[in-house]
Length: 189
Ligand code: URA
Image (cartoon, rainbow, N blue to C red; front, side, top):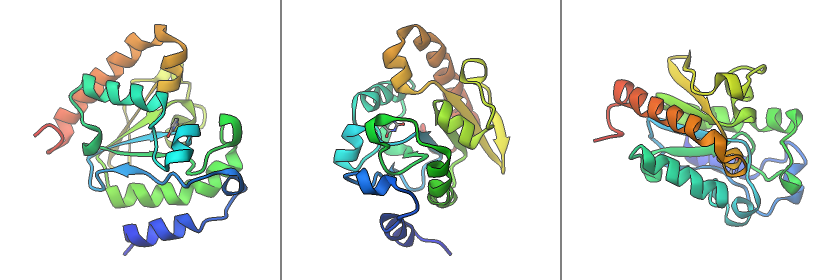
């Protein structure tokens, strides 16, 4: 049986790719370890690297606002990233880095055992839904794998750069709220 304690300490000791050499902190994940809804971003940015927590910089502030729009509290969901160490200069994590980190995420997902996984952005959707995922065409579409519901929406950083995408992201959030009401027991208690 896996445990959070084993996972966290093994992950902290990981030297599976070179990102650990340039990071300040491991950004493991945060939130309710028994959440029914899990959000998965791409990788830590500068603020996250300094604080050791995902989505605490400008994109995180917008994520919090997005959650509030559908009455979701950050503390009731679990938030993680595809890679746990900051790629230098906020570049996209390379496939070799994503692959090296994947086992940690798979173990987090298995321990949280969420009913719904929301991929934040293209990199997360490609890793978790389909390597050919096109975020502009397929955001807001629901998929099912291993008894879990998956949906991708725009990354909050993309919504900060291009506000014209926000109405579409809002529709995705409304769809998420509907799905939560349909399949989750406790999120909106
Ligand atoms: N962007 C991400 O994908 N993850 C974070 O934790 C912060 C910004």
